[in-house]
Length: 571
Image (cartoon, rainbow, N blue to C red):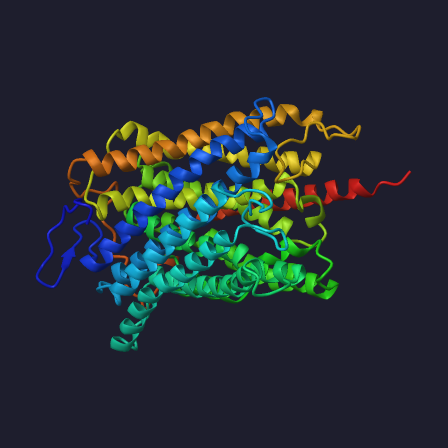
């Protein structure tokens, strides 16, 4: 495909990967290439528009006029939060299904039809936003009704969501055929994670269609009225549900990449699977934090969603937070790669960009995105986060650091194992995850500080001076300087990934087939094996690391309650 063929296939279209031991069919490999390359194009477009957004919010520069800011912000958001993510997530499904199971991709024509719809919808959305003129409104990601955005935008969203649903069908059909032929065999953990991801994705996409089809009919005049409260309730099924797809796909990538590149083994298949099942029932409750200030929901609804129901998802996250580093520690100790408490970690292949991006994704998502997500999803603490720049900092910590770094790490090995190309500019590839992850982590922190400590609002091009008032955010100016510099560095880090990826495809040598660790047991193994032997190996390093994580969690929780208490001083 694209003239980038580097492997030979047998008469049935299969090849054996000499690195992972997977048996891969050309039908799946071609679609992974197609969706993956399109995702990188979306990453490039979103990154270009990020420059304009960052240099506008950094008011020392103030690049865009207020009339243009929403247009650039909307294109930035749709390309990086939706198109980059969902195109990559379909590729992740095809890796987690046909690749891991050693099967051909079922319904390949349906996969191509889904891709065509997704691409057409994405192009239509971008064009509609760019050409938005008054009285239409640039839609942002939320596109709240009854703000009148272009009908072409709503049509594009419906087409894109329909395409994503269609593109997921070949994965589900592949799983169905696997279970029909092997009814008594358990799916491998990565395939199981991808399957749970597909169910959550279907819920989010169907919710999006239920939201956007009536809204499209309203914009073209078929419906005379759209209820704003109903829209808000329904929108967050897809608005936040799409980010839950990111979470599950990212965790599946964590298991895959730590195994293939770091030599990790799953500490307990049953425990990790139980965490995925908990996500299935509880993860979408996280959308409730967007509605904590909404008058349309009852106090009982708020309490249920932000406490009892949300705890099910938090427990699942805590399980993965221990299981993934524990698997890495077990696998490396088993191979004698580092002794002592943290030798297994120090001896890991940190110069490998695929490994570095994966581990940085785990760390930054956990400490910045995961902790803040639990706090802003709590009913009382949400009052200090809602509609401030802290919310933007949170989802940059989850999506722009956590998920994007995980997908970059996977992308490095897609270049090797799918396209068969060795990375060009190896020194640049080595530093890229650290530059991007470090800069984006600080950028996210600055946005959180500006939101929580100063109450800086989101979605507005200027806040230093509010016309007609004496209120001033001038005290926040030094943090905006740090924000601006780090935002530009993170954009540079993202650009380096695109440069390495495109350069590798066009000029990379043929990949020689070596990994930084001895090849572990194939990731296609099912889960019907005894985990007892793993429990005989030390996990003390993981225990210390997760204890530190929990300690930071408690401190941040207490600090946010303290900051909330300061709002209620009287006299």
